[in-house]
Length: 263
Ligand SMILES: Nc1nc2c(ncn2[C@@H]2O[C@H](COP(=O)(O)OP(=O)(O)OP(=O)(O)O)[C@@H](O)[C@H]2O)c(=O)[nH]1
Ligand SMILES: [Mg+2]
Image (cartoon, rainbow, N blue to C red; front, side, top):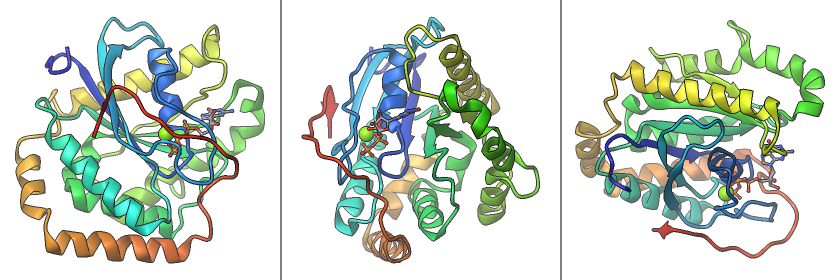
């Protein structure tokens, strides 16, 4: 049921090609959302569906929301962000967790990333951080040893990823950090362990907010904020971001489609 209050509602967001769609597909163990490499975002529209959370089998349903990747094509990004806000507003039980997806091979906290996060914060309000889980993909089992140094650097209490984000945004909440792989997830104990950590992080966020979904006053705030001032902020923010990043897109070629309900 799409509007069941017991569903976990999970939205993935982040830069293009980081593994947002793959992460959702892994959770439900079904190739529902198209994933791959392209010169632009593979996911072009918001897609959502309700499925059992299968990796691991937690006996709960999850309403997954896939979003197009943020990149430096200014006007498309603006349009996408507007669509995300409109979509979140239609969710009668709000959002349990926003999963910000990064790639372990590109963990630079540069101006582009900062602007993207600032944009999400401005659109969704500072309360949004309370519901954030940070995920790093591409932590594949066969590369885990080699990636341990990256992971240690990212989790460093002084200079690590979360601490830098905490400083940028003056957070009072420490978003949980999860490292996972979307490669060969079907029969892998490693994948099961990673995705159990993701599930536990989502539950921790839910419990931290006493199962208050990200909704109510938030929706009102968004309604009030979406307007000329907000539009200008989005445009200028993305322009600044685009100017600071040479290329966020990846090479390759692929047609695009989407599934289920699409905005
Ligand atoms: N090895 C490995 N590949 C991954 C992992 N996660 C995603 N990929 C690959 O990375 C590419 C991009 O993944 P997507 O899931 O399409 O990324 P996305 O963030 O949805 O991309 P956009 O929709 O374009 O923004 C695909 O080729 C995936 O197979 C991972 O954990 N390990
Ligand atoms: Mg995608």
